[in-house]
Length: 116
Image 1 (cartoon, helix red, strand yellow):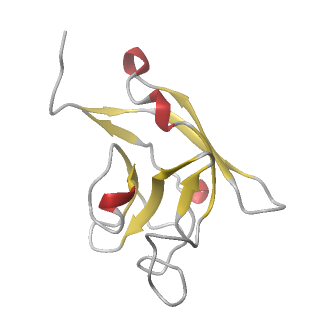
Image 2: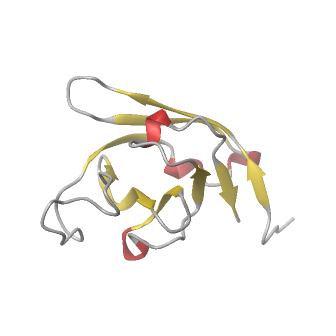
């Protein structure tokens, strides 16, 4: 059964690794949907980030370890953190998101949601 345009609340948690600022996105998704987005993310300062201070909307960007095309970033206008493809960096778009203005995604207290 194909589902489109559906938003599900997820039991996803982010845990910070104190030594290097890495975070672990973990949890379950409906029928394993978008599970490839779960895993370790580290603070990313390489391409496609081109701002001088390597921040997007005043927050760090995280790249999935081993898959630099998968990023987590904050969008100030929407007040949300997003997990999505690098080409969407900085935009209010992604496959996972959480409505929270925390300084880092592991500090978000609201539930992550999935769009598919």
